[in-house]
Amino acid sequence: MQELLEADITNLTPMGWGPYILKKWKPGDGMVLERNPYYYRAEEGLPFFDHLYIKFTGQDTDKNLNYLAAGVCDVLVVDTTLDDQRERLIELDRNGELNLYVNLGTAWEHLDFGINPVPEYTRPDFFEEPRTRQALAYCINRQRIVDEVQYGLTLLLEAYISPLHPLYPLAELKAYPYDPETGMGLLEEVGWRDVDGDGLREAHGVAGVPDGTAFRVKYQTTTAQTRTLIANLITEDLAVCGVALEVIQMGAQDFFADGPEGPVFGRQFDLVQFAWLTNVTPPCELFLTQAIPGDPQALDMAGNPLFPDGWQGSNNSGYSSPSFDTACQNALTVLPGTEAYERYHLEALRIFTQDLPVLPLYLRFGVWATRPDLVGPVDGGSFYPETWNIEEWRLEP
Image (cartoon, rainbow, N blue to C red; front, side):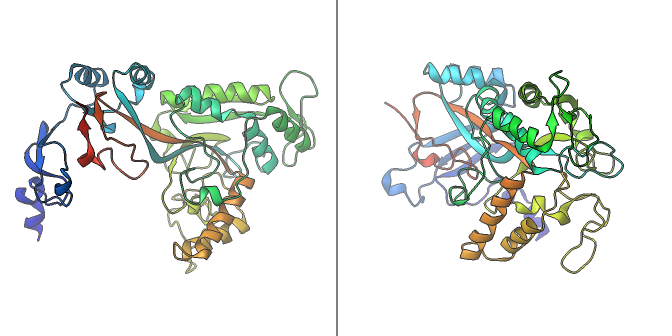
């Protein structure tokens, strides 16, 4: 069996029933595919092309775009990493020089509130009060982030599932449109007021925060260019509402280091920004009390320590809600497609958007491009490759 798995005939001539058959494969260089005469849609005249030539060109964006412009290639897939050329691609698409496509991904960017940090991380209890978290959500212009940083190519989120998910329109999700007046009103209710008139709010009767404490917090994220731009916009927005941010950026290895040293999973932060994956099954388990990293009380269903080493949990904000836990755990134990599955997941989503342990920002995505006279490609969404309907691709006369 092991010999079969390692044999060239197995790895270099895969079996399949799709529109094309692998004819030739030169590792590191390219592939040649030819029409499959036994394809089940062959009687429809599909696929349209007799051969496909796949070239491994690497991730030099300028070189790849020049290939497309010169007719050396017809399609640049997501793997050619065109993301840093989005503005240029939009202009080329607008001018009819190429067709630009967007594949919405399964990763979603979010801003996390440090609700319950580890005891060693000493700072005022800025975010225990849900109204404070809601206030900052109203103060942040997330649509501007989508429009300016992501060029309007993706979707703003209100929860840990995509707006394209079948449960999304059914959920009674609390939304947080950009409304700084509402945000500032909530801050006033909680006790964050700018009494001295210096433009920065101070605590006046805020539970867990000494009176006179300035609302000045640290905002940690990676050094990715996109996150730098987002951090700058959020800093501007929150300044309008009287909240000051100190932006700290670090390499991904340090940022995502395991606890207790790492800031994210060591629960040593005020605000952090990064991305999680979503899926067909809504990932409510990310925010369970038992998923708090560093929590010795986290036990599995048999009563054993869930994280023997203490720091493997995903709930880095330290959020804990018995009602959310109950809804999520029930949702995870019933079969998809049942009434109970839908009901429990919708309840968990409703609680999440009300309590707001993290602020969803947008759905991440990849871009790809084709020559302008290639017709048939369709954005595949989150779970399909660019070539999911390649048998229908053809060139216009």
